[in-house]
Length: 397
Image 1 (cartoon, rainbow, N blue to C red):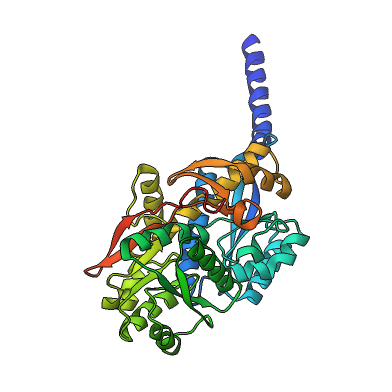
Image 2 (spheres, rainbow, N blue to C red):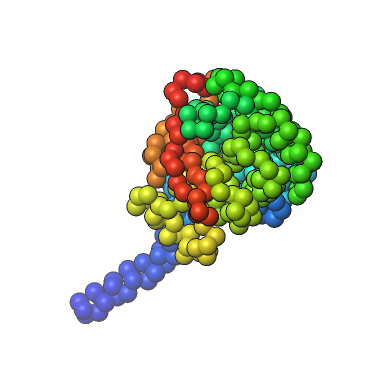
């Protein structure tokens, strides 16, 4: 009888356990937080947009693989939504509407200054915190837009580091700038003017072009006639920048060329061919991993996509979602204003060193990621790492 009672009690607790087990599993199931990436997956800017989308997605994946994150005792994981703006502001607005209202994205990363500016009223009316890979200068980054961060290497940082570098290495005194005719391009010129002035470099030509252009002969002919020491392509997309390099050399330009905004060195060599020889490029990090953390990112990439599609511009954006996650964990909040206040003064470790937001001296608010750009050149048809020119302290703060 005693044995039967023990068996009965055992069966009871087993059954009770089976009843509770599904409830416990449900209690532990992570909720999802939707994150939208509005990038340029097609068109001439896709050499930027595709690596940026891939790297942001990998960052979300890394957080999820570690079990997600907890807020007030509840576990959350990221769900990524992707949208193609083609670098057309109207398409970006359509994508933002879908992301916010249909897909219920709590946070966004938008590519392109002109695209972010076009989405600004939507972002503000919905209190959306965005960490964007964008230019746009003061039109985008200012105290009136406190929920907008720029999570890409700043072009102001680049000029601050690269102008002294090229003055010392190449003796440049005069420069011609080429930019796309939009808000992004205008902000690129403004940044160049600011840092050229600080470094006593004279800008003798300022030209703009329509995005998507393939023939730059007419503007280059006039520009070359002014004999600048340096031609630099500022916020020009990678495809167009490589074409400008090629066509400038074909027209006989012998001076220095700088492609400053994250071109893929392999693409520049492919498009410009022998005319890429000696060109300088400002790239978001080394081509080859330099430490174990960077190697892990590279290994993750090649497990998902062909190694030939690796692009060093992937580096900074892998930390975008982890950075936001750390802010959420630290504040135990999803509130955009609370997170923005935290991020403004935060510093965090990354595979590329300590990162933070800055440039209050330029924009009146700390919203630009302080991420160093590496210098590359082309020698004998191959990309060669030169170093990582540092921005002089106190220049822009």
